Amino acid sequence: MDVIDVVNRLKELGSISSLSPSEKTEIEKLYNDVLDKKFTRTSCSDCYHDAVIETMLYLKKHGKMKEKSEYKLKNGVLLQMEFGSSNFYTNDNLTNDIAEEYLVKYPGNANYFSKMPDDWQERVNNRGKAYDPQLLENVKLALEDGVSVDSILEEFMTYKVNGRKVTKKLLNEYIKEASSIIVSEQKEEIPEKDADDTGEGEKIEE
Image 1 (cartoon, rainbow, N blue to C red):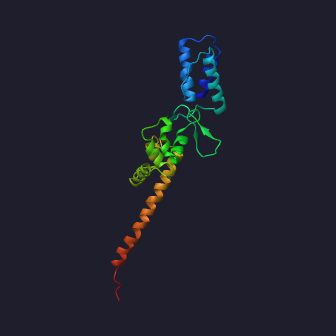
Image 2 (image 1 turned 90 degrees about the vertical axis):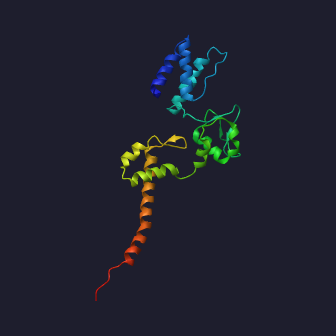
């Protein structure tokens, strides 16, 4: 469902005074899909309608569903990127980028997280590098094999860097960088060839 469909369905659910079990389950799912957090039932009789309102307000404010994070903090944990900063992060506003940026600075605080992707250490180690070395090498090899730019874009569109799929714009940057490397390597080879040619120069007849 796209955002408009979700909003319309939430409006329908919000207008129902007595929700059925299946409608409550649907609200829980939409709540989780949009806000990327689990719905918690309370003793309040309006908790489902409150969830509908919270979900709709988020969509109206941001115009999209919350970015799904592969990182979850332990209960009660607040992340602060810099000492004295007024910006704090909880599971409500945590993203992959924020979590990994934090772990780059404070790798010893990995125990603050209750959930992390299996390759989080690799992602953190690669973060800050200009290019993912494996992707750059693969693109370079493809160019050297004569693969067209369009084919490279199509082939690597599902590739992930730091856990996120690469965009067409980012792939074009890799293609540009790989092309520059190829040109540089070719230039380095030219002097050696010239030297060989010079060493076997033709003899000028007198």
